[in-house]
Image (cartoon, rainbow, N blue to C red):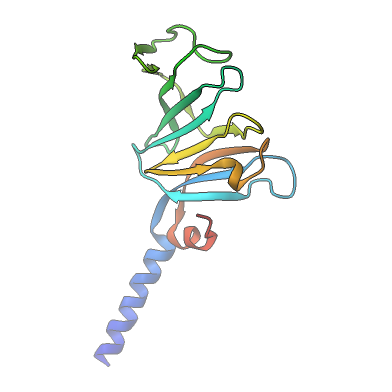
Length: 170
């Protein structure tokens, strides 16, 4: 009888963890209108203060861009920095709103942003951009998990461990 009680207690602990233990999840989900709207196509556990980067090639200059965000305690994204090696359309051209600039031999680093995003919007490049999501030494080529030209968003949510495991999108 004593072993049965221990087994039941162990099962209750496991179930409690699975159903009530919240985990923070970084998700990429489809934002295109249609049947797949809001479908999660990639997810991975994340922690507050972790960095998430979006790497892409600028369509005009055809040069690499790296945008790095930090997950904050509100499960939103603070812009940490942007790196590029040449000026081009829709890139910063001078310090504004308190940003700081560092000029290196290989790149320009813009940082000290005071900007927060609920989610990171990305239109996956069809020809040049080749958007890549980078997190914890993993790289996910977005056009490999959803169509080029598709609109996705990156967000952080809090879910139960069982919900995360049930999604099964990695």
